[in-house]
Image 1: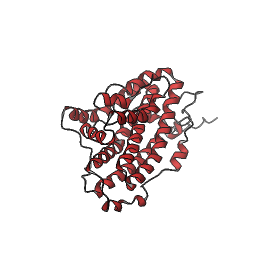
Image 2 (image 1 turned 180 degrees about the vertical axis):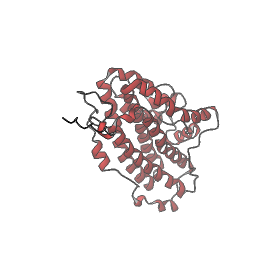
Image 3 (image 1 turned 90 degrees about the horizontal axis):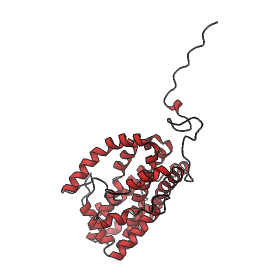
Image 4 (image 1 turned 135 degrees about the horizontal axis):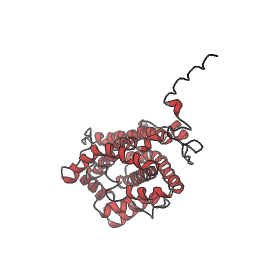
Length: 297
């Protein structure tokens, strides 16, 4: 009797079980939450509508201090590429469901940043191609960390495994809820119809980002109590939702002087930004923005 023909080796995609290559037989391969990634992907939003009305700036321009706040928000929104790189460098890239969300998220964030850049250009303000860090020691350290993080994160996150994903999701939740609080405050301070429209459309998108990261972090923390400790560290010393590693802390402080000049305004801003993170289970109520403001960013 002729020997049975050898089976061809499975390709990379065929090796996936339940949506993830590294899954254990008999166990759920991909975490499920109430957030519909498929629905988010299907309603992806690109460039902002052309009716933002930028020509209205010809009749009524923004004050220079408000433009400082717009510039900081532009830098904050366009820092997404670096954050995406760090997430994809480690364990999180093994989660197909998260990957699907992050690619659409980064695409939409690009267009939020683009809308803010159009506001700056309408006023003749500089729009450098890259984020400009400060020239002081902190700025130089930020540039160094920006180069080092992809290598170190790739190693330690893969060593720690899936439990670190909750902390990464909590950190992104903090960044998005802080961005939303700043956008809301920008609309109030600018008191301009163009900024009102821009902030309203940006916040509609950001609500989805907050919902995704909140559900991912919450579900993972409830499923694995050991994920709480690395999540607290991810939100702890050295982390600020106001500045990414290469961003200017000096510009962030100037923006805060415009958006939240007094103690009362800063408390309201912190309360609004930190509430989604504060409510996560098992983290003992972290308040990342309030902590960053106390430490000078």
